[in-house]
Length: 306
Ligand SMILES: *[C@@H]1O[C@H](CO)[C@@H](O)[C@H](O)[C@H]1NC(C)=O
Ligand SMILES: *[C@@H]1O[C@H](CO)[C@@H](O)[C@H](O)[C@H]1NC(C)=O
Ligand SMILES: *[C@@H]1O[C@H](CO)[C@@H](O)[C@H](O)[C@H]1NC(C)=O
Ligand SMILES: *[C@@H]1O[C@H](CO)[C@@H](O)[C@H](O)[C@H]1NC(C)=O
Image (cartoon, rainbow, N blue to C red; front, side, top):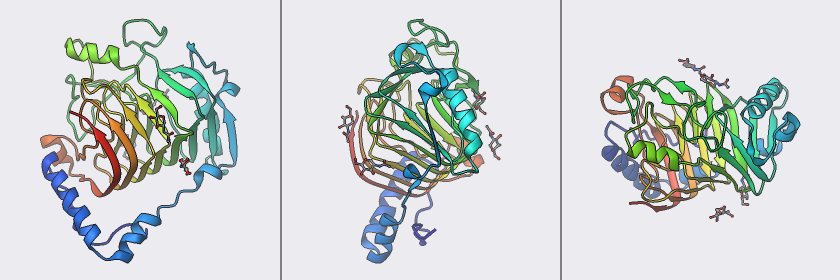
């Protein structure tokens, strides 16, 4: 793991503000440190999985319809389940062509690339059945994170993320600047009206995973946080645009949380809350869980937020 820097100057501890300071100090140490080491860190995280998956398929092969009306949750989950069989045979790539692909949450698999082509939009469904329904039925509820103790919007469980992965390795979510649209307005209303039974979903959450790349996509109107890698390592987040109204609640851009070796670069974020928030769980739960965020590198970030 050549790209890791060896000085353990960056041990991030408990509160967000202290973390931020630690990151800044870490970055200063880095930039004023040995040039050759710096070059190694910047250049050696090469990730070639994009072009080398042995198998590929299109969401249309699984009955997907990109008309903005048809619910494609089953097509996505069927595609991932089918393509997961190639994990030990060169991996697989799922293409999503131009169109509006309404979907509920689905799970990723290892040795897998999800590729949104130009003008492909994943539209988060607001209900399990109908796009216009004013409820959030159909979003599975999962346990709170152990390092959070309970949900952030309401005690107890949380709605699973639109795109979710746990215990994976070698996963790429990318595209030719395709869009993931969380259709968050309904969720924001529920939040403001104190009508949420569970914590709002994120757009992407990856847990307990290794070698994750999220790149060349646009995320709009997330119900809450956008990109949330947690308890994971070797994460590259590159070339993404995140857009949400600056009045929208908790629409954080990228929140690396109890993660090791994360590189975030060339990102443009307009959000209603933090652009990048470095986390290691939440208060006493995070302390008890004891998994700091370590070795985080951020460069070329444009941030517009309150
Ligand atoms: C996705 O993973 C979560 C967590 O393991 C699980 O609760 C959920 O049922 C899975 N969803 C599908 C469609 O398999
Ligand atoms: C993933 O692995 C963790 C740690 O080994 C385990 O606690 C958790 O139940 C697993 N989660 C899923 C969704 O498989
Ligand atoms: C991707 O699309 C977003 C939203 O339309 C746009 O703001 C951004 O500039 C695009 N990025 C690239 C690299 O074309
Ligand atoms: C992202 O887009 C840039 C610019 O078009 C391209 O050079 C790069 O290879 C792309 N990255 C990935 C991981 O597809």
